[in-house]
Image 1 (cartoon, rainbow, N blue to C red):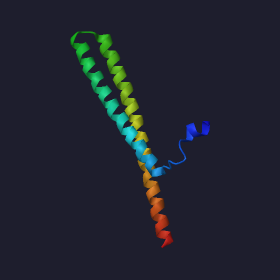
Image 2 (cartoon, one colour):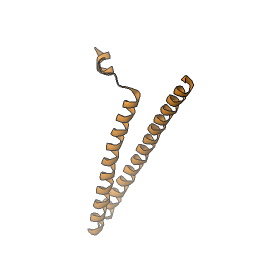
Image 3 (cartoon, rainbow, N blue to C red):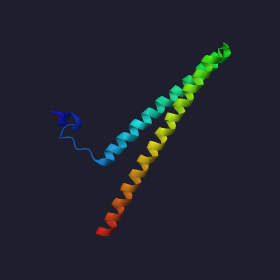
Image 4 (tube, helix red, strand yellow):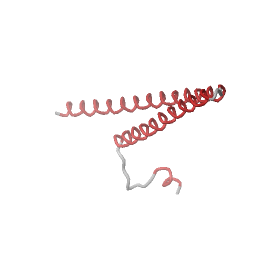
Length: 100
């Protein structure tokens, strides 16, 4: 019973390249969400600065910096996935070259 929950259906066979594409799509979605959050925090910081609420503006900028760090992590994950795709392509081309 637990095996079905954690492995999914047996009928669904997903290739590794499809999994990588899905992971890239998910990372792209997360990236857009983080970029939106960063822009929101910048706008809030500007609003707090206009009202002269320095502490709240600083907190917004700290959250912005945190989101930027997460964005960097996402970009490094994306780079790793692209590297994996490139390696798979090279292996596939090498195997085709060796077979002929």
